[in-house]
Picture 1 (spheres, rainbow, N blue to C red):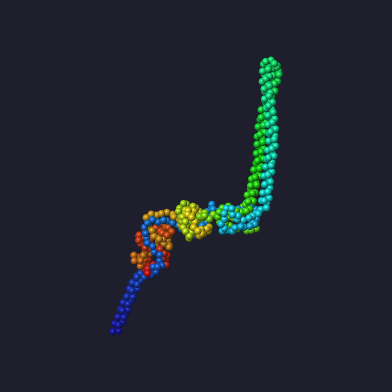
Picture 2: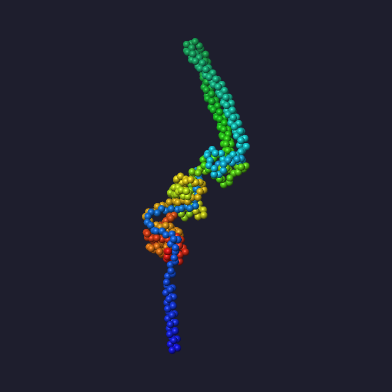
Length: 415
């Protein structure tokens, strides 16, 4: 009896071990329970078919002055700032005086130049009077020679007739003719001399006029330098701060920037675009700029070739009116349209994933109570949408939010 009990215990123990082993194997083969995800915390979107506009966005941009809207005012001469009349941010007109400067040496040069002009003009008038007097004397002399030559020519003709009649001898006629010929030659020479004298007068007066012009040019230069000591805006706009502002009492060298004025209605958007996206941008593409107080249409005018911190600067000219409050250095967002794709399968752009790649996304079940992982091949991307190549059909709903915490599971429950 005792041995039979022992055998039964051994048998039951064996059966228990077998049952336990089978249970362990079955449990190990069971799939883990799908984790529960709060449906209100995920971002779903439905796959659609239609046209898609490819866009890139610059979320860090600024309104900056256009190159033709900046008036940078340099000092025309070494000077000292004695008064600053307006501060940065002041709206000014072209004739608004921004500051006053003094330069005693310029004022001295201006007075000297004024005297030089007067001296050159006096020299011109004196030379003109002298030359005209000399010319008049030569004209009188030439006129006398012309009169004598005409008289002797008539006498020679009379003597020629008298000689033919035998009234006077041939010797007397030849003498008369020789005198007429000599005075005729003198008359021609006097006319040539008079012409040369007139040309000489033109040359001398032209030289004297050149000295006047030189003196006036120098005077104009010093007048400009003197006038620039009272610094004016030059254009209507707003006074901008200089990188190195000038102070009252400061001595500035010629060429130093003393003021800057910007036309506020001539601004452009400088957008920072990721280097990987900027390669698809070309000049002339349409764009829109959000000033957070209105959206302005525009177009791309320049793409900076330099890459800074992984981005390139893209300039957008604004084609619409600026909204109130639009000032230089205002933060803006911008969107640039690259191309329009027709009749494509598309879905909202996932939080993680790049274009032209294969993404792992959760596709919701028809009852939206669960989702399974699917591999989705995507093509070209826009700011908010991405093209679907394979893995999804029109009407499918996928989760676009970051689901990286569930990378170790292939399905989830939504509650």
